[in-house]
Length: 284
Image (cartoon, rainbow, N blue to C red; front, side, top):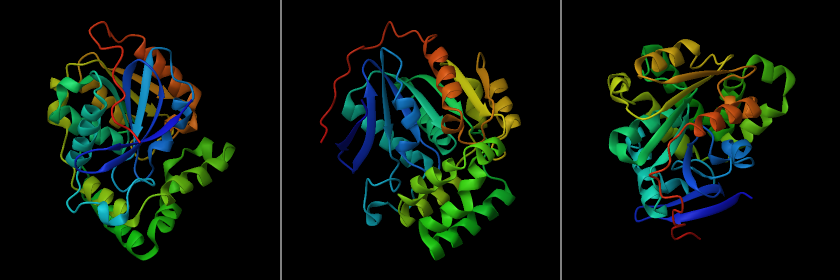
């Protein structure tokens, strides 16, 4: 069963979805979606694992627009996740980040490496935006200012899905649009600024010491296979899995393949030192 909870933290309240019991897995969503992106994985949690999927600030129905702080960054998203993990009193977690969630995972690893037991980097990259990508962010800021989340969903939804999904699963476009339109304009704009100004995570790759799985949709045109291969080759011992018939949102385009790869990776994680019964925290 999937539970929707709200954690009342010192700085803000965070909505998160939770399913399963046992060792923690933190699921970090893509831009411009929210925690419900992870519903396919939350409905089939492997035994012995507890999956927790938070909304980033301004994404999903978690906060009013005025709650999004100026200067939001990947570091501030990561700080929110660290605060949530402390609130829930989790043991070191397997952190799964897809797209923007991967950028947040890199920031989380910089801030609190002892909280990361293992890492899954899906449809993401370590490099920052180049000039062309930054110009695209500026154009998207104009869209959100003019048309709000509806305009952003119109622009982005088709690009997030692979060719096979657009052809064979047209309902996914509507699902992605609904997830995008649940966010606030302020949250989306803050996310765009965070994406545009994110640091280069490449220098930290060769120091990553935990187990790492890199995942890429075979039809991902936003962070294509070359980006995944670059991350994988720079991290000693990292594994690479390519998800067939999937684009940038591989976890929802081919959920069985994605969840299977995740479960196989979890089966390799040494959790003997983990607290198998983390407390639930103070939830509403």
